[in-house]
Image (cartoon, rainbow, N blue to C red; front, side, top):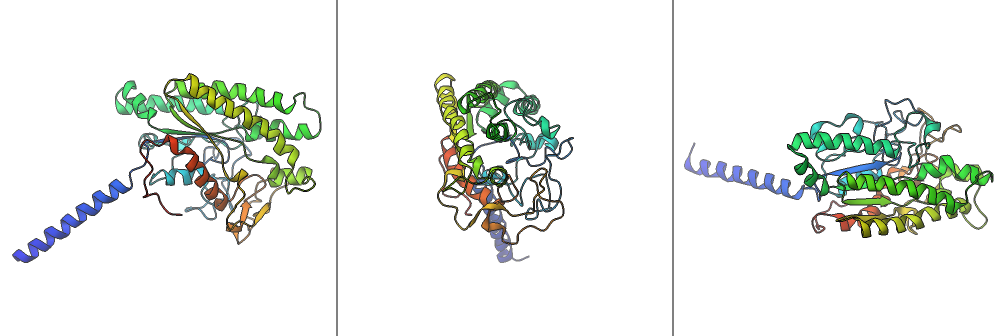
Length: 357
């Protein structure tokens, strides 16, 4: 090989090394790990092997997701997947059901369709994982992290730099309260029920803090009166496209949640809890034009897509995938808004290198 060729080979090798290093730097996540707690809006497979009706490991779910159905409750990525991408992770956060030791250092998704804050929530759907159980699963993971990193103190330092996302309460209302409220059989006023749920939520979020979480995004409830299930059950209010009675009931929960977050930040050392919303209160849905109908044909029994049915072809124009859950297009809008609300939690200043969507 000539001297000139040697120079060219060395130059190409250095270019390869430089480009590789640049890729590593640009692809570095904003935080070392991302832990996700929630219900079917974030579930990415934890319910698949459990004895519950609330699982969606069949088409048309996952029709737009690489590899097809995974247990996600829409046609593609869910809000947790997209937030993980925006945070800079090159892989989606693994579900607790099959997270490996390598996975858990980057975070875990504990989400379970049908779950809630109250322990009784979800019993109607079978063996789902409520928030209390998700916290227990997280404590198991913490022990595994401590073994991997060599000590509890190193694990605690690692976990304190992570972002924690918590989105609970939808099923506490949909399964326990809104149907009974409309039939006027509930013993609780909206504020009494919100107080009951928030009191339990307070204990659980404190437990998460005690386990080492310091940067926590807590999702508000969306406008449940606008989902297809509520519209089919009760019909839209006069002058509105939603069931405003249901929307008004949920407002009490969100009001109390803001107070709870302020209390936690004021009374827990180093705590940074943020109140996070999605597209539910947005006036703009971009190219999404169908705001009330499900994209797939739904079962009257559970509001999920009929197995094997053909969904709408223009899925990016639909807000709802089935009777309860948003499409990937809607999840993308929600994730962008939630990501902005979560920005105070980022370990480093927000970079201009965030992926474009």
